[in-house]
Image (cartoon, rainbow, N blue to C red):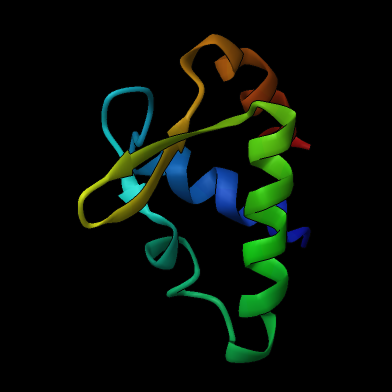
Length: 79
């Protein structure tokens, strides 16, 4: 299974959309240790694509799904 798909599914399942956000480290918790580096790269690619939004906080970088692209995200998850 594609790492991007796993990350998007996790954010979607927990309803981390728009104003609700979580740390990038939380996205990689359920993955095997040898895939964590690839997962962080996948998150950065999703940020560049505009599928994941970032929010800078005093306690670190937080991410959430872009509410304007929920239809596109749903299609990616269902594939």
